[in-house]
Image (cartoon, rainbow, N blue to C red):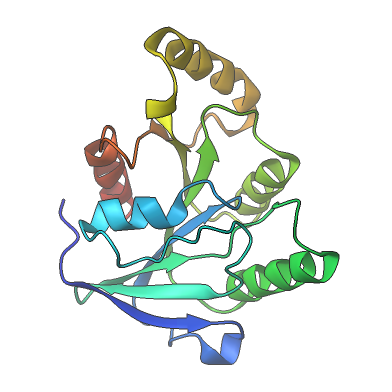
Amino acid sequence: MEFKEAKFLLSCVAPDDFPKPVLKEVVFSGRSNVGKSSLINKLLRKKLLARISSKPGKTVSVNFYKVGESMHFVDLPGYGYARVSLSQKKEISRVAESYFQSPRKFAVVVQIIDIRRLPTRDDFWMLEFLLKKSIPFIIALSKKDKLKKSRYLERLEEIKEELLRFKNAPQVPFSSLTGDGIFALKKTIAEFL
């Protein structure tokens, strides 16, 4: 599947600003600096559509991208960056929560976790939230290019155990740098559309 004719639509911090929930939405969630914007750019085959910040924790808005005539890609603010103030963390949390509490047409949430690291407490909180709300999700394992093959294979086994509670969700490793795994992720997203 190809996601064609993608364009930036708008950036919002309040539910009143969100576009009307007419189109299906593919939502990208994860901690700060996990590679959400890079993944969106790779999936849409546009290098600079989603802005990549050099400072983690900087984005506090929900960014909407119109993809063709049938869907939105939605980039949520990254969570869990340690070097932002408590008030900034609360604002990020408020914006993301307001998105999920507003009436939306969720197709799937792409929950991104860095394959090199143990999932964080915030990652687990998000996965539990999606499970509880019965929102379908994919676990996308980013930065696979950063591991040597033997360590990558070890991490695949370890992460199966770490995320055992969520074993029914597809787990798709990928690299936004090399493109490895992007086709598999597109195919998996398409199954939810």
